[in-house]
Image (cartoon, rainbow, N blue to C red; front, top):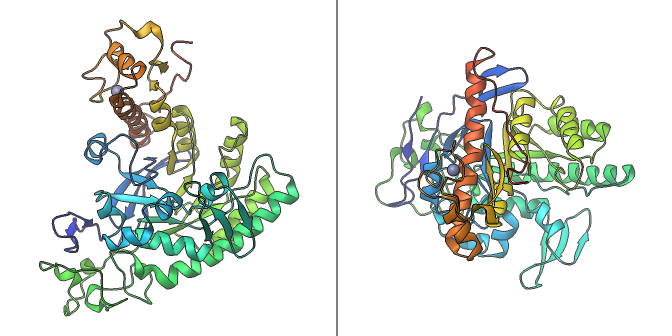
Amino acid sequence: MAGPQDDGLLGGFELNFYNDRMAPLLEIHQQQGAARRATLHLPHAKVETPVFMPVGTAATVKAVPQDVLESLGAQIVLANTYHLYLRPGHEVIRSLGGLHRFMSWPHALLTDSGGYQVFSLSNIRKVTPEGVEFRSHLDGSKHFLSPERSIEIQLALGADVMMAFDECTEYPAEYARAKQSLELTLDWARRSLDYFHAHLHEVPWAVPQGLKPGQFLAGEWPAVNGGPYPVSGAQSSVLNPESAVLSPESRVPSPSLFGIVQGGMYPDLRRESAERLVEMDFDGYAIGGLSVGEPRHLTREVIERTLEFLPKDKPRYVMGVGYPDEIVEYAQLGVDMMDCVLPTRAARHGLLFTSQGRVNIKNKQYAEDPNPPDPACACPVCGRYSRAYLRHLATSGEPLAATLNTIHNLAFYLDTMRRVRDSIRQGPQGNSPPSLNVEMADA
Ligand SMILES: [Zn+2]
């Protein structure tokens, strides 16, 4: 197995390629029931799944620096295309070497398509088969996003995993409306995929034109768009265009594109969406259009009934979920990847997820409580600070409150998924997956 290799592109910034292209994108190690433990082989990291992905909307997981994310064991971070397109602009990020380098995160990144934010945040919009016209929520300026444009922006950002442009069907939606939305999303999926295959060499870490993932070799590295992106002096042989050495180890990986299953809460539409996307042969599949206000039992039902139509050998990602007990439940159904703003957003409001249930740290009952936020948590916050101190920070509006609360919540989520992976590794004789108390501890 090839180890990390300095790609030589980024000077002092260490951006490693894990160019083990002999491995499939998803290497499954164990299954336990429907749950599986696997390694996702991405260009910038090997990600152990099931995985929870912290949300870093504007190229930052709010209030937490990147070195802390690393120490907590965050493997892959999600960034929002819509936000980065509007500010600072994808061309700015491309010119600075791409999103990995811009935010100094040399590990795996996933970008969404921008579709969800366009539909939920922007002010005025017109949806046509061509794309979506909208006004920025920042300054009212007019913009247009289409499948091609979304992928173009995502390629400029250069994430390891990119998402097809979709329309997130609102809830509730009539059958006819969900069906119409589904057709639009399928058309956009096809166009996203076509554009992706034609342009994937445009990622800032560059992939030669006309070649598909894993097919090209370093010795064939061509000059694209005026040459590969700035190559500094001490480049590795992997990137040397003169190199005639074409060993399998010198293959440079390319990004992946996932399709998104829509179809509202209708099982037959979900099935149709999944089957037609699978025919298009994406690298992985996401289940979208959930966490839009539907009851929890419906979320689970849609996930369960969609998973059976998705290929078992490809990554499966449920977008925008959930509470700690929900991410455990969905991993047990066979979901590999999840993301959610909940741990970070709740933290900024003083809500902590703990092994004893949810704790609203602003409550008066913690004013003189010398205990750690969660006695069972090994995170740096629980190892150092008391509930009384965290309550003081939160009620005083101190910026450190957001940082410390977020660090704990992310540690709790990441540790929860680590225990899920351990439980799959140990098999039926091992520990059962973590059962979580989701009641409010102070209710
Ligand atoms: Zn903690």
